[in-house]
Length: 585
Picture 1 (cartoon, rainbow, N blue to C red):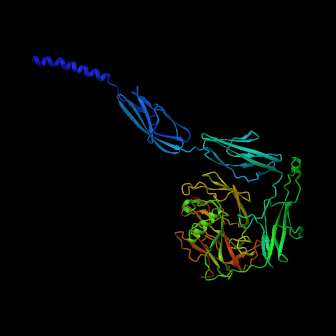
Picture 2: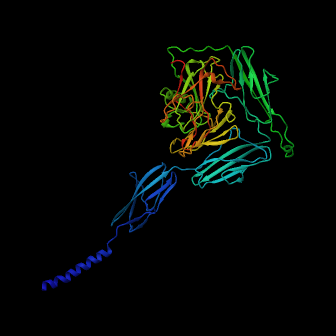
Picture 3: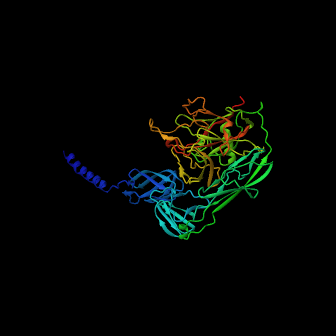
């Protein structure tokens, strides 16, 4: 009993000591991040700031570690990432009582300053004095951006588009500045205010990558010439031969038949047929010197070239691609479509021929895009189906290509002679435009491609990033910042199906590539396989609509014939898989 009584006071003393030690024992550190889920987003070049709250961190050490490296030893992190990507950072806090850790994730995005794209011709925008013209730019990263339009430093608008109107003839520089949190972009637009639109004359070359507009015609034959005019109303035209006016040649279209073999110079002049109106004079608007334009066209009359016969050594299929000039489109430059490394026209032609040799698709892009092929022999006109072109049309997706043919009149082995359109079911109809042109403008990366046509229409080739993510739909081998394509435009048969609710491109009658027309022998093509349309050389017509009467041809051109957008299908773009001589089986 006495022994127990002695133990009790000793136990009480020991318990009292343990209690005091617990009171003074140091607590472990605690980290409270300023982001609930430990997730941060920052731009390249911007400062990442992480400011946690701490407890029990007297005399603590702080370590911020990223990818095996210590990036800070401060309580708060300030760090700049130079490369985009996802990074994981470990924060460790140590004291004599222990340590605490937190892991954070940082997504580093590219800086996204504004990028401006405006469809403006190289020589500037022509605007009639006193008329309002709305300029609508395409601006990337424009959310929450500030727009400022200014002329000579004076702000004229702070809207996304600008309504320009000036009454005085002259040159103006309209500057657009767009600013967002990541930076700013500027674009200066040259505007020519004119009393009336200047006359511009273009005679397209037979080949895009050639500026030679020399024309060739066989002895005893005639050639139709028709330049493109920028102005069609209130204009008079005059053709001259070797400096002498031709009395009855006063329209844009002229049919010339040389008298003998040799070279001639035809000249075409267009000018306004009336002076300025009294209303214009009352507003002190004077002529700007753009009331007249002319162009000289060399014409060479040659001895008739010989047909190159088909022999046992020849191939029935096209053996050379002379030009591949697609319009912008969803398949252009796409690695999935085989374009890897295609950055020059030579490599583009090799790409296209390689695809045709394997019967793989070659996309011609939006309206006007084309390909020119040749054979190792001439294809004779035998009155029936002389050649075929394979496309991948199905019931709901027809993307008709206009077909053109050429005879090597000058015998130089190049497609630099006269193109003749093959008349199809839509030829001559009021809604078919035989004299159409579209100019495409180089966009910024990952942007839509803008276009304008010779009727004043505008639009874009939409970028479908989820399906075709390449940065540019504008052909990489076109060096200029804009290019113009010329040809025939069909009225689109694109609509939303009342049955499926999906977009579809309905077929045309006959005479077009990549189209389930009457010239397809078997229209059952549910898998969009390569399927042939058949063509007659006898359907070739001149610019005046008369039969070309070609005995044979040496070159074929196919050109996307519809300017239309079809929702989930994207732009209408003709696809070709092969070209085959059907006369020699």
